[in-house]
Length: 314
Image (cartoon, rainbow, N blue to C red; front, side, top):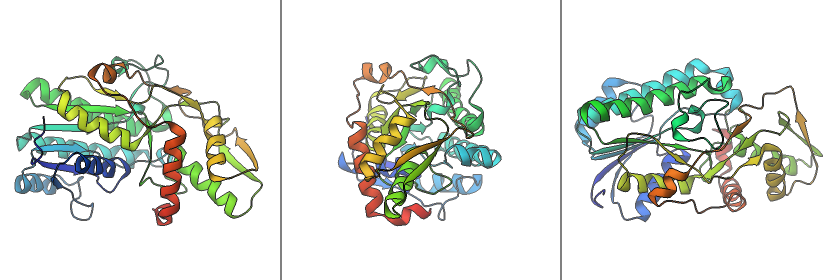
């Protein structure tokens, strides 16, 4: 168990997952939380990361920092996604090992699993077949991070664990018109359509892809739970065990934002992985279950978007 007074470093605290973890830690009474912005600490620079760990000596680490984006962003800049995410993971995990961090949690992504993995996807599906092409570079970087944690545990008995969440959404999301994921992209697009009184909104693909979504606040609760109750070698899936088609998701967000026009589909654009639902039985057996239903979480996310419109330009 993490002591309430322990020194805890959360990387990527400005992002959706990292900020949610900081809020959850504070809610549970943890008081000594260390954070650094990208300007203060560039995690792709090994010397800077090692100096930070030597100076601050955090006892526990949540690594959530990363370069993230949707299908378009991943397809347009695979080299950037691979390099930045792999360098951040390797530098931070290595420095944590060298400085005797008591426990580290590495945050991955469900895109690490094969494109045609069995459904729901068990943790054992990792590296059993081909990855989804559109986010392969990002997936490879995340796989490297979780495997490095696994190898450090095996070779040096470090208490480093990893969690693979379903598609995340929630407060403090990124609503960039090109670099965002599907939920923030839909929220922005439908909201702007309402504001401009547009009669149609065009979405990518044919809407048939199935996805599972996890509210970031629930993920944060899971991460703190795992840091206190799990020390296994294998990663742990985090999700709801429920799925929805992208077409249904678009309709739900249209309703929440008040869009009453027609939704069109550009079938010349990629759908991505056809289906991706996680097997969350391991987390459930450990004693954790999600709390936020999708429509409730979407309403919270939309209200957060309305309260912080500047995030749309990140």
